[in-house]
Image (cartoon, rainbow, N blue to C red; front, side, top):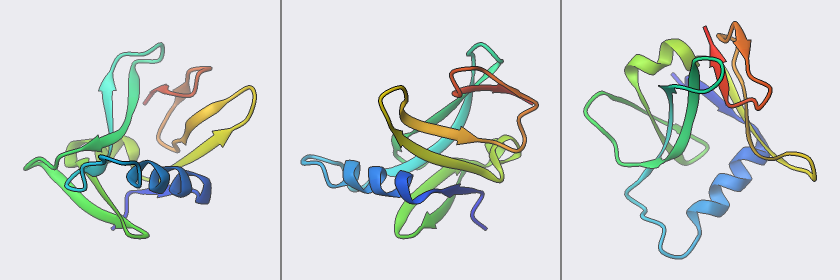
Length: 109
């Protein structure tokens, strides 16, 4: 079971980051949430070491992890990469969010 989806643009950017010199190949792409932000919870997306409570999955050869307790908040989410003049970075479309912040990185359930 793959809990989240990456668009082609997101996969291209993640692969670019993984090919940077000095990238620690033992790390996996972590999806998660943490408290905070204008809407109550903030998305976590970054490279990290796996923990004992992590769900391991692969998206087109990109090794990924997510704390099992975060699946409730993130299942079905789509992550995209925007590279425009007004918006550059990862964006999140989460069907579980009841409201989102204008910045797109904070949400509530």
